[in-house]
Amino acid sequence: MKIISGKNNHGYSYIINEIWAEYIHEKIPLPQHKPVSASSMCEARMKLPDDAIKTINKNIVSVWEDNTHPETWKGHRLFAIDGSK
Image 1 (cartoon, helix red, strand yellow):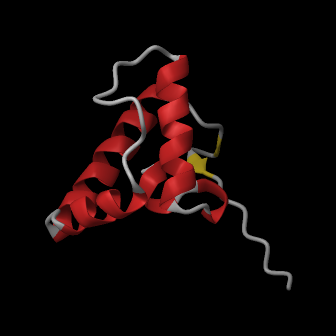
Image 2: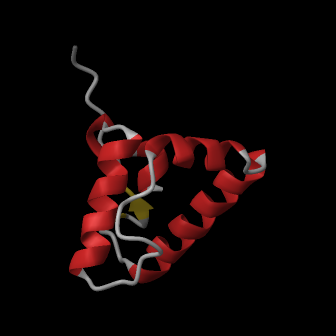
């Protein structure tokens, strides 16, 4: 999901390079030495069916929830909202 939303609103190029560097650091095999281009990623993403992103997100959230134990208040997850301007 990082590639979809991105932390700090960075663009595809930044995020792809960050992921690529992390894979190299962790010695995860990659298909090529250089990262794919941001435009290639955009083109490939446009070929996905509309529900694909929702399904991927749902699966990632499910795995995260199964493997983390966030603190709760009376059994409810807490989210903070800052309404100041």
